[in-house]
Amino acid sequence: MSLMKRGGSEVKAGALRRVREGLAWAGASVLDQLYPPCCGGCGAPLAEAQGLCGACFAKLRPITAPLCSVMGIPVEAEGGDFLSAEAIADPPPFARARASVHYNEMAGALVAKLKYGDRPELAKLCARLMVGAGREFWSAKPVLVPVPLHASRLRFRRYNQSMMLAQEIARLVGLEVDAFVVRRKRKTAQQVGLSGDRRLRNVQGAFATHPHALERLKGRGVVIVDDVYTTGATVKAVTRALKRAGVEKIDVLSFARVVIGDDNPI
Ligand SMILES: [Zn+2]
Image 1 (cartoon, helix red, strand yellow):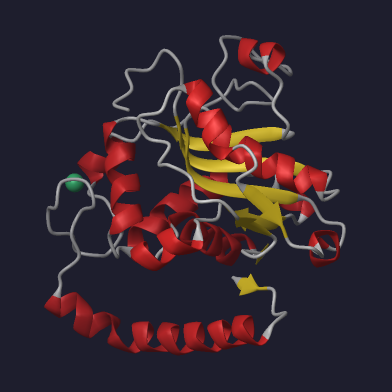
Image 2 (cartoon, rainbow, N blue to C red):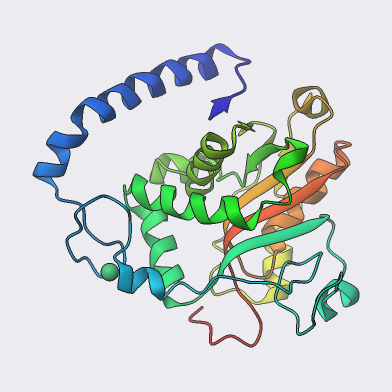
C-alpha cells in the first residue's frame, strides 16, 4: 500500500510502517513460536497464520452471481444486467456496491476480531476475498478510501479496521489509499442496534472532506472500503460528502453484506 505522502506526519507514518514491517518480517518466526497461529473462528491451532481453519472458512458464505449490478446483492435471474428492488425503490448515491460474503455468524465473528483484536492475518484474509468481490473496480485504478473513525474513537481503539482492509487490498491490487480525504467531523453513536431511520440520522452530516479533495484524487474515482454493509447509511453519508466535494465516480466495497432474507445475527 502507498499512503499519499503529503504532510510530514504522513511521511513519518510511512517510515514507521516500514520499520514495523521490517520487524514483523524478522520476528515472524519467533512470534509464531511464542504465539502459535490459531483460527479466528474456533481458536483451533493452525500450521500457518492463514486466519481460519478449513471448517470455519467453509462457514463463510460468498455472495455469488447473478448480482444486482448496483447493490451487488444476489438476484434471482439468469445472465444480463439486473437491478434489485432495493436499487429501483431507493437508488443509492454511489454507483456500485460489492461485498465478499453474506453477513452470518462466522462473518460477524471475523469482523468483531478485526475491530478489537490485533490479528493482521484476519485483515489479510478478508482483503483477499474483497479483492475478488471488487474485481470490476480495479482496472479504473481508483483510490481506496476507508470509512474513517472519529479521532476520539481511534485513540480509544488505536485501530481502524476499514483502514487495515484498505491497506491490504491496496497492497494486493497495487492501488493507493487516501485515509485523509474524508474525516468524521462529528462523533456518532455506534450504528449497531439502531433502526434503519435512526442509522441514517445518526450519520447525516457526520463526514467532511479535505479542502483539496479533488486535487488529492487527481481525477480518479473512489472505492469506499468498509467492513460490514448493513443498511448502507454510513457509506451513503461518506458518498454524499465526496459528491459535495465534486468527486463523481464512487463505488463501495465491504467484506460482509447483510442480505435481506438471510438469517442475520445482527
Ligand atoms: Zn476454525
